[in-house]
Length: 114
Image (cartoon, rainbow, N blue to C red):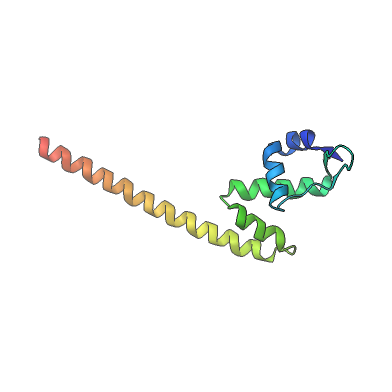
């Protein structure tokens, strides 16, 4: 069992994030000591925390992460990952178009000066 400070250290999640994740029922401590209120996490919590870190790095929202965690079979995860990939591809296409617009604008400006 890990106290919240140690768990924060090994997962890279801040104590504030861990408290928030517990509040929204995303990642609850394995137990809370009844006398002092200390939060304790176990090895199972560690693996869930690492999954959450990965999902967050992939751009998942809190609501999307909750959906993944509620679907204990994780059958929906592949679908959500594919949707994220499609969304990222669209963002890349949009950014490429913006870069092309910038290039065109720069070229048109040079034509006016020369």
